Amino acid sequence: MSASVAHKVLLAVPGGIAAYKACEVLRGLQKAGCDVRVIMSADAEKFVGTTTFEALSKHPVADDLYGFAESPIPHIFLADWADLVLIAPATANVMAKMAAGIADDCLSTTLLAAHTPVLMAAAMNVHMWTNPATQSNVATLRSRGVDFVMPETGLLACGDIGEGKLADVAVIVDAALDVLDGRERDLAGRSVVVTAGPTHEAIDPVRYIANSSTGKMGYALARRAARRGASVALVSGPTSLETPNGVTRVDVVSAQQMFDATTAAFSTADAAICAAAVADYTPKVTADHKLKKAKERLSAVELVETRDILATLCTMRGSGQVVVGFAAETDDLVENARKKLVSKGADLIVANDVSRPDSTFGSDTDRVALVTSAGVDQHETLPLDEVADLVLDAVRDLLAEAGR
Image (cartoon, rainbow, N blue to C red):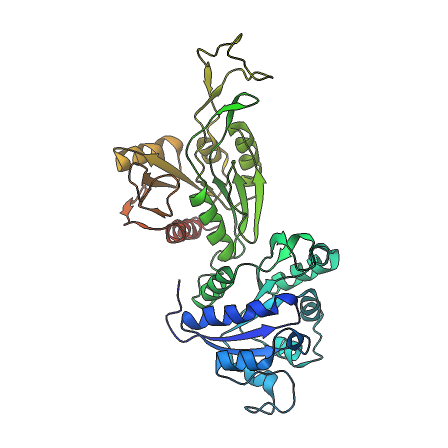
């Protein structure tokens, strides 16, 4: 996604070890067509000098309330100038100041004066991030409309391993562009359940029945829904994918576990998007030990049907709840999707032809048809994030039509 006009971004850089990454964030925003100004704290200047940001931005850096060349009141000038205030890295200290309304330097004073969208890319030590005070401040700021790019889990600068690492620069830039393009908050206040990945149906402790699903489509849906402001519960089968920022992930293995987790999450949700490739069958009996060829030759596996998650959600849904299913087909794509729409009682079926190399399991693109009772909307091959936005646009509209 790219900025279609010269959006104005005020990049606020507090004093954290990840401050050097703000230079890359600035360049990423510029490449997307944004005009970027920088405001820094005194502590930030101990990590990166003002000269670097001035050379990159082509603007003077504001680091003091006095002596700013472009205005005698820099905090008001910059707050009025910006279309978006992006804080990267957003430290525990700056969050605490914002939550309490403290304005004791140029950066915090400007943040208090900000009256355009604010996006915080959090980064700090894992223990600082998980501290109840920080989590309370995050909740307070989110309740006031501040948006977040949540930290990732990994090796931190202090040597600890845990949640607190600044998100990837591309993730931060994309999140900023989403806010600027006005799409970010159109699902604010909504709760969405997304299923993703395959299920593994155990034959014995080391063997199972599965399929080729990687979970990429479901994770793209969860990522985009969270970016657009929704509260997202991602019920995930076994995958190697990282949890998207701002998403609550529930890991499951079997179809029954996915059924239990999904139906529980849907009871309080606005919508469910069933993108997982759930096994239709599971072994009737699972051995409690590894079956040995020498004495327990496995000549056949008796199977029983798994519980139908999509149909169950459609049956249990309350007023205004929306249910979306996926149909991975190799032939008669639209016809099979229409049959599934009716037989399950879903609001929308996303049909994709997995026989195509650009639309199969594991691909980074997909070619889908959105099938509803009103008709079929066929799309060309698109990146998964764009497909996810098409689906989420439809969910948004269905929720509005339902008056929810």
